[in-house]
Length: 494
Image (cartoon, rainbow, N blue to C red):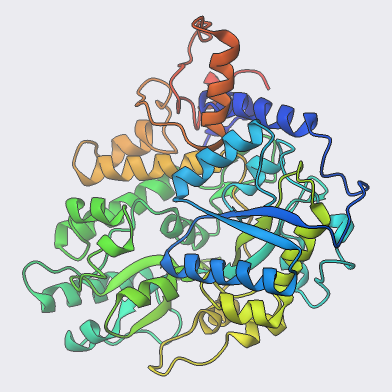
């Protein structure tokens, strides 16, 4: 079945409030006279720089230790730590870049790097590769991630893969044998149901993955497809209504039989792993990126194994893949681009830094650095490096980074899944009118609190326009997420 739903650039970005933010960011970047690779920079002069990131407690501790270590090795450089939650991080970054006060270096998400790169907000590290930043030993595919429109706007600092975490103690008690390597969705279904029945009332077999893009992507890959088709212009979804409908229906059946957690428990899990039935000992299976292994295991008192995502039985494409998880990027206007490059190299290549950071963000991309954090777990649990190595063995290449605006699609998936979970929408309605593949998204909208680039763009737009607002074009909505995946017949001209 061919889908006619497009991630049309103008309709998508304008309706999501991102087009205005792009103007703000590009203007801010263009007005800055700082940060050019040709600008004179005294390598020994005192410098006060900021490094910004989000993350769990383990990431926060290792990051602060790394910043202190850099100062010890480079006394003339003071790195001020700036930590925030996910939403606050992007709100603050967008506002600071729009105000020409971006952090000198920062953690960058694989979901957001394309957005920021195409607004001209990120420093090009390419002039420093080979001299200040060493990538010689890297896998060619990994080396090229972060190059967007010919500019190296970020360098990966970790790799990971999607995983099913398994409480081995609960599964053993339930008499369920875990797979050693690959398995299928049918295997997952039967194992989760068996565990739920063995656990008794108030327990389940697994978390509900219907709202996670980390679960939907392996599902459609197993069908020989991709989440996004980034080869065309405009970018489109890489799957169709049948794929999405089958996915939602599969999870609807798991909830009905009691193997997946109830909707209220799933809602709590959306707030973080610490609220999950998995961490609370009420379900033995949980979906997460492998970069979270260290942090989640720290919350647990029992061994937890990392299992690969299920494949489709007889599928034409492997579900699992290794991806660059996080990057380090810099604001294009930083007065210290060379020092930012030196700090980047320190993070990925300095043995002392690698040991301090460990696997808190996933597996280091540099082979030598990965070996430094490769000590086997005493309990027989797969380390992040061992898990990534397994995925390289049984999986296939990553399709693409999240395209510009793709984060909005992930948010739409979450909202749509909740509608189905709580019976406010049927699977058929979700597929045809409500979800990412729906044709009616332009008509039924719910306002959301803008974050990141969207928020900064709206602030600047309001300042310029005052209280006056133009009416939206006929057939469109001025609401924040209207037309996220507008059908072809509702598209505005590119």
